[in-house]
Image 1 (cartoon, protein in one colour):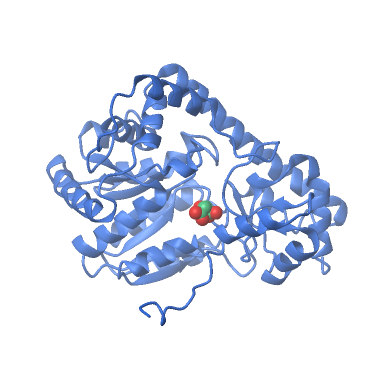
Image 2: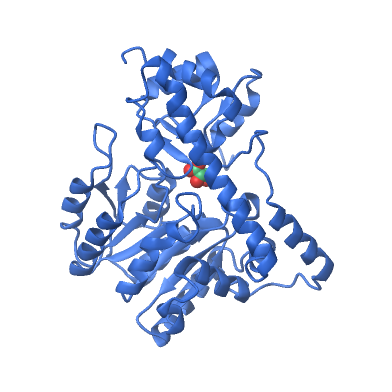
Length: 399
Ligand code: LMR
């Protein structure tokens, strides 16, 4: 038979946790696996602003014909403003534009193919650790993937090691940076650290590819864009992959974009022609609905205000959960050991728990997290912080 020689690959370690969690009959289980936000009821809500925008679309939409290769033009313009700032010089000079993609992952895939096809010979540098799909997307595009250190053996951000390695990166290579809310660690660079990275990127003529999947979940919608805007202001060429999955709660609608900043408007048009061509061979044209929702929200004063408030509420809840978990660990003598959970940013915490401890947490306490020790803080039930702390203490006997 044709398929006889085909073996089986293991399921995705992050998405697989969703299934394992769903199958667990324990009513006291904790879902700290896949990176989705949950509210106090344990649900991943559809923001009210999204519901209202969807209703408006249902009432007014007249066609479902294809949207162009770069997607919804209003979405592209408004997203560029959200990411680069409404007063961005780069936008004023018409040298930045968005190509709509199926989620942030689609934007990464498009950038990987673009680099492979249009910038041959360039390697890609990823933080160690990074989101596992970064590794496979760039490798499968045929690019050489290398790593710069990010977190030390002590589970602390190691900026000195990161900078030291970046100074050795071959000229012209691509360096992938997480704009905020680093996945999987939750450790973010300070503004001073970013300035040092910028200096190396400039000196070594590296091409920055900034992954921006969590705008609004760290310190706020504007604050989280600080590094992206710094790089866009200071460098002629920057790639940004933006996702609307988390901040608009549009996970399943697959909304994202690859934003390109080029040296001038002419060159931007050249690059965008390549992107449209590559996208045509990947997904032809992007899905319409989610981007139309985002464009409706960002283009309407009231919906935008409602949405910003909802993002801020999600952000504040995550911050409270971080502080709450550290407090709950204190009676177990673990507050210092896990103090980093309180200072990390975004949904994720690299807890420092080992793969064995993660396994024990799952088997003994129905606590689901990624085997790297990454916990999705946004999945914690605030009313059960004490039982989560108790479970962590139970598998952390040496502290
Ligand atoms: C995660 O890291 O959990 C999220 O980015 C979801 C995913 O697709 O892996």
